[in-house]
Length: 493
Image (cartoon, rainbow, N blue to C red; front, top):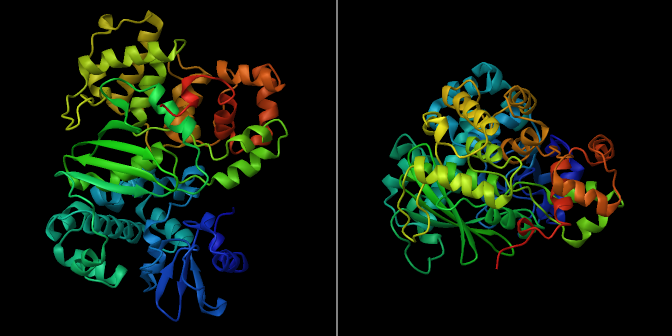
């Protein structure tokens, strides 16, 4: 798929006429005769081509005066895969907007995080997405409001506050404009839930592009789970979340056509951020068809892809946490890494209350770990130095790991730290920073897979061969890992 697909009119018309769900989130169809906008897979009879216009974002449709279709609910389609596979200004800005930065810090805060002027950021987003950061954040607030209206019995004033609106009036006006219904009417039209949820608990569906193979995704998260912070229970992966206004617990369950998500939040203003981080954790905005088609070109990878297509890259909800855990996992087994992380969590993590039991703490923050006496850390001295240097840089802000991180720059800064070699940096790039092209040629599991498949044996030769897999080498890693019988590759029973 190319950037700016909405400008390829012929291709967009074909996607709409065939109701192709693969293109949901890539572009939106606005219908001139009805004043509504739809996702490409809308089940309604496709409009005549001359009545279609195409836009790159829901916000652009709303800016142009179109309302969301009540049948296909385009505001709930998966996000564009572009924002997770690109490292440019627009992609980094979109990741930050999804993480709620505009609502918390305004457009100046967004621009400051990106290292550009407010004017540059606004101009770039308007040029590529047809809407500026305020309009994009407004569209996201509208989607969050709709979710709360339809899935909870919260008073409308509480929903307006939780969704990030500055006033009840703005909330009412936005919902009417975007959905052509008043908030109370939107709730009246919503399907009735089977049972009321506990206070602060929300149940929702996270959409994705098919296919999705849950085996390595949930298998990896469960096999490496830190006791007290994460667990696998009754078919669900559960974990605690550190959020801007409080903390939360997420329970994520794979279903055939969606991920069931149950969120328990101490502050509902964190809903948008929690959803964004859960989607990022499970790589739900990926385009598996594009990835798998590219990897199938290699005759040695093709059988692995055909056997179990749709593998995602298991990522993280907290980039700093993952970096710490990557250091703890250097040259030790998965079980040993979990033990180290559990000890740190029990000693230095923040206690939380889990209504279902099982989860007890947030993973320790960099600031908490920076205050730890290094002599109390039960690990080799060199790794202790690596860990304490990392958390000190994270705590004082001289190193920042986030959704907006520049991948190349962050790699270089990590490599400058003592004890950070290519494996540690690339696993952080792959799972924390979200680089879809990160590669691990020195990883033991990759080397075993290479030997089994007849791929080159040395890291340099394997890296040269893997050039053909770009820009999806992180996904190739998942397929190569899957040749082993390690627990990370299997959905827990």
